[in-house]
Each structure stands twice: as C-alpha cells, then as structure tokens.
Length: 369
Image (cartoon, rainbow, N blue to C red):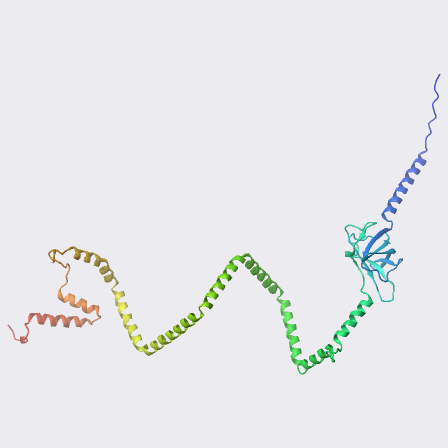
C-alpha cells in the first residue's frame, strides 16, 4: 500500500517580498525611535528657587524639553527633566538655571553646544559641581544694604567714609589737574613701550626664571655661603673695637705717609732719577755681572782651599791672567763712570809723567840732545 504525499504549499514571491519589506521597515522604525527617543536626565542644584515643574529646558535659546520633577534632597535639590533626543548634548555639559529678568519664569540652559565627541545618554546624572543657580534678588539687596551701611554715616564717623573719601580725593586733586593729565599720558606711553617691547620683557622674565632655577639647583652652596658670611659678620661684630682701632691707625699712617711724600717730593724725585741711572748701568753691564756671579763661588771655594790653618798661611800663589796694562785699566775704569774720552788721555799722560820724573824734579826743558 502506497503512502500518500502531502501537497506542498508554495508562497508567491510577491508575498515573500512584502514580508521582508515590512520587517525592514519595523526594524528601521524601532532603531530610529530608539535613537531619537526623549532623554531623561537628573541634575543636582544647590537651590531651585523660582523654577517649577513644566518650565522649559533650552539649548542656545531653543526650547528642547521640560522639567518633570523637583525634589529636595538634604542640602541640594534633584531636578528631573527631559529633552528631545533629536538634539545632541555633550556628555560633560553643564546645567544652569537662568533668570532673564526678575519677574519672568526661569528655565534650565544646557551648555555648551555639542561640537563633537561623546554625547549625553538617556538616564545620565549631572552632579552639583556642573550646575549653577542665579544670584537671588534678596542676596543682592542684602549686599547693597550692607555696602550702604559701610560707606554711610555711623556714630563713630558722622560724615561717612564715602563722603570722607570724596572730600579727600577732591582736596588731593585740586590744582593738580595738569599733573594728573601728564601722569596718565606717561602711563599710556609706558604701556605702549611695554607692549612694543613685549618680547624683550618676556625674555627678561625667562632669564630671571633661569637665574632662579640656577639658585634653586645650588641651594646647598648658597646656604653654605650665607652661613660663612654670617660667621664672618659675627666675628667682625665681636671684634668691632679692635677693627675700629686698626682702621683709625691705618688712616693716621696713610696721612703721615702722604705728608712725608709731599714734604720730600723733590728729594724723592732726585733719588729716583739717580736710582734710574744706577739700574741703567747695571743693565748695560749685565754680561759682566753675570760672569762675576758665575765665577765668584768657584773663586771663593778655591781661596778657602789654599788656606792652611795649621801654618796660618796660603799654600798657593795668586796669578791674575790677562791682566791689562795700567793705561788700559785706567781708561776702562773711567769709561764705567761715563767720563769723556779726552779724560783718559789726560789722566794716563799725567800718570806717565809722574812715574818717569821723580818727585820734586824740575820739568824738562825743550832743548835738543
């Protein structure tokens, strides 16, 4: 017996295409609704005076939502509000209660405007550090009243501090209008100069910063120097009397030296001139002096060695080598004292005459032999 086959039901292609389109539309609509749904935000404020449920929520002056709930929580107020998901708000946005004028309603302003980055999500909370409330009129009035009392008349000051200030200012400026004008002009010129030399000014500040950094880096050395300086100052302070006496004696000595130089200026000038001549002679005979200094130690040593202390006599004969004749020796000595050349001839001639002719003999006559 053959089994029976169940007939296959074929779905038309048009029906299948229609189902796919419907599913795509539903999915897209769900995604769009999810992305553009109303965002509910909680924000904490220090106060909510003048704000009520139903007040506006705005971005850049455009209304985007409403306040849903206001509930006090200890020393702060929690405000629930919503805004249209079509508008993007920065994740770190601030919420500010704005009072345009004293008598109109207030609203919540979300700022700043979104320009990119993370977005605020549904259910997010804005802490009290990112919220602000306007100054109340009563607070302003209280401060104004306090200011008026401070500058007004008091039992201690019947004229009032403000009146005294105005009177003193008027007395100070009376007759000094031109001076005040000149001062303002110079101040303006100084400001212009500082503006033009801004780079130099900042360079000076940078150099000063480098200097202070160097001081900070060498703090130990500076501290040690300051300690040593303090010790030195203490020693000087402890010996102030002796130091004063020393300075006074030095002052007296300097005065005496100055007076001595003034009294003997001529003699000192002459002595310095003669000393100059002597030093010139020494310089001119530098080689001879060097030779004497070179041979003197050996000569003295030899002289010591030829002396016999037992017999108290010299054991050698002194021989002078290269001894010049008397005439040359006399001329050399005269040259050392810068004598004229003819003085050498006169002296040697007279000496020769004295040696040949015995003393007391008559001068030879001019006869022929």
